[in-house]
Length: 139
Image 1 (cartoon, rainbow, N blue to C red):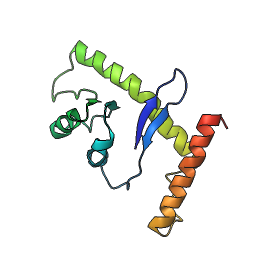
Image 2 (image 1 turned 90 degrees about the vertical axis):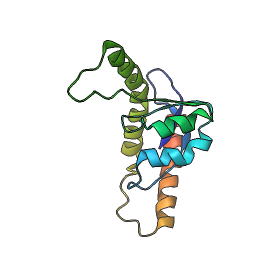
Image 3 (image 1 turned 120 degrees about the vertical axis):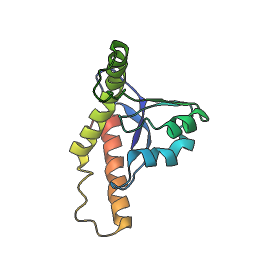
Image 4 (image 1 turned 30 degrees about the vertical axis):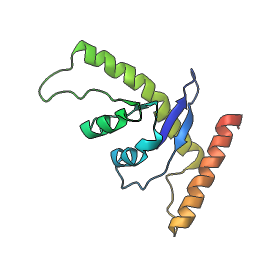
């Protein structure tokens, strides 16, 4: 999970925070555990995030949650909702590009040869360190 910090035109964003979770943990659960660290920020999520309890919990640390509107069953989105979705998706696109770049650069999702939790963490954090070095210094 990455909290995007520095959005730059036509460049990958520099993340403010990075945390790792098991693939079996839903993003929403992971964000709930991190909400204390998400103070005074804007979180751009996908359609899985709009949970009323999360939005309420994020108000205390002054974090704004922006997610695309879901299309109602059998209905259509209003023009305002469509415009809002385009705005949110434009902000999410560099973050998704960052995830894609990270996986291409490090193959971080490939951990088939790891035998213990400790070596998995070493592998992941090592790959993230390499990726951040590459991102910052254009390596």
